[in-house]
Length: 163
Image (cartoon, rainbow, N blue to C red; front, side, top):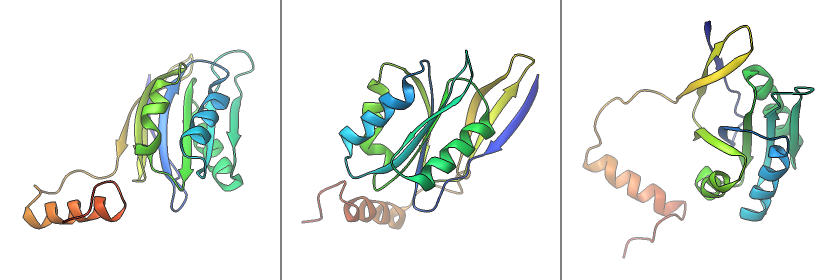
């Protein structure tokens, strides 16, 4: 067995959701999840088929994100893995709905941070062992950091404003 890492290419202003699912209709079903949850989102989902013709299946409403999702799926080259890239929506908007999708087995990460996918390669093929999402912690949050965090989530509309 060989261990590898593959760096994901996340287009500017996009978020990545990386997961594993189990069925040929994954790309279509995840497409429906996104358009029904955040209708204005721009996105692409690429799914690595693990049997039969073993194709990268793709559905998208944005050509730039389509190219990037396919390139990332091909770079990972592990069966039953999906790469979802999206703009004009955040992962928090869709994660619960993705997890409720019948085909989805696991979500490895949901982020806009730099991501490396840790892969095991054997004679049979490749599998995802995990991800390295962003950087390691550099310290402990202090009062000013907490204040900045509170202000940020309110600024982007996820909490009520200060009274």
